[in-house]
Length: 355
Image (cartoon, rainbow, N blue to C red; front, side, top):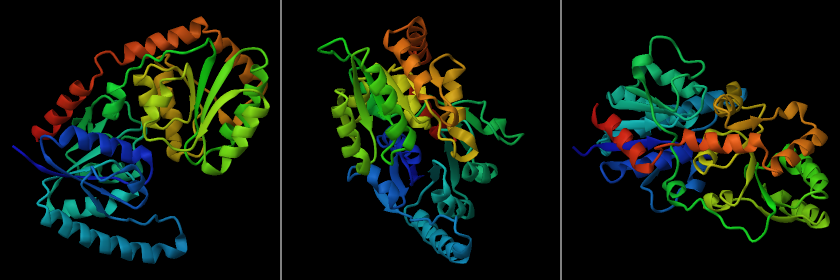
């Protein structure tokens, strides 16, 4: 039976990418809409049936009264949106953006499904947990999970865009250089843009490396000039929707520890060094990386104790494809055994259809 489903998302790629992915899993079987805020539109194109619910952040104490008024207004707007479209299921990927729609869905008695991509349950998901039908996550060992809700937990493989499954992960090189991909995010970060490159300059004098570096628009020229001056072959860019085509060129990736990024690297079988964002809420980036570390699939470096000389020495070991590097690559392959788009698709449809 066809159902009418609204997926609530917005903000950063950490929320929007899982929403896009689950939309594509459901669209052929159910009538599906995506609700997002203005920021989330950057990840969506005209192929998605989209509505705007632009929920404000409630971070400024002095603006709280105005934020509450706007959320009340958006909850009323969400109420009529859900009613007009005859929505029977609301799926939320978490974040403050979901607040008005989840409140309206609760009032209307619409089933709420929560998606938690991180290893620490988010505050919005935790708040609506008692009102939800299911909490869909990647592991049953979520941190900060309230007691007595195990019956609501259901696990799936990480929500990864279909293009990652379809791309040919074999990449043929023209030489023997070791390619390092740096994914610091389109906003950039000091450790990725000012500290790591000193290590690259040091090791480039001893071995042949290539650097593919994602950064913010404002740092592109600085990094291009740095790599040029140090005779390091490089590609520096800010945003590329077809990131999978870039990632598969890497022998190694250095990255933050967003859930989607780590899952994508894992599926592409690319060993990675995670440098979790120290300020991530509830330290969720560290916990995301720890999930892979405990399965001997990655390395974790603490940004606060970063030492460029030790890091350079460590990189030289990896560029020689040490036994540790080979072990990580093999374990990533084992981790994704039978992880196919169709298998994930069948699991998601089963969850939606059985309730």
